[in-house]
Image 1 (cartoon, rainbow, N blue to C red):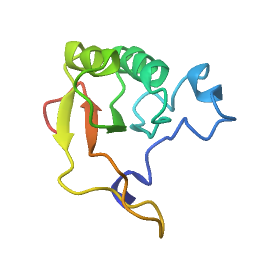
Image 2 (image 1 turned 30 degrees about the horizontal axis):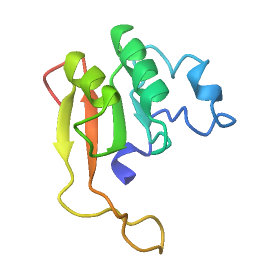
Image 3 (image 1 turned 90 degrees about the vertical axis):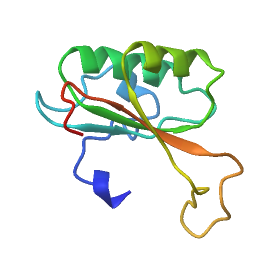
Image 4 (image 1 turned 90 degrees about the horizontal axis):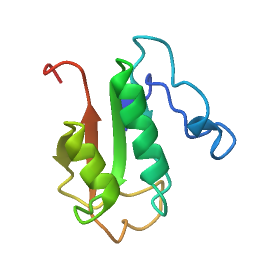
Length: 109
């Protein structure tokens, strides 16, 4: 996750405040780790920000059966499957697989 440490992160903005604010500067890449319980509003916002020319990377639960996954696929997201269960701090591993979804204006990921 250090790879994204210099990216703009809208999620800490007072809970859902990141959904109302513009994400970062014009060319600043964005990293989003939305709530696993309700990623749809964050995915819709990410697609909107991507259409404004921003590169957005989302860390999400892997679930191809959801509307938010279809929204990402329709927007042309590059999907990277994480082949191990994620560990958050010193806790046990997540009980689900994860993925990165990358919305980029460039094919040079």
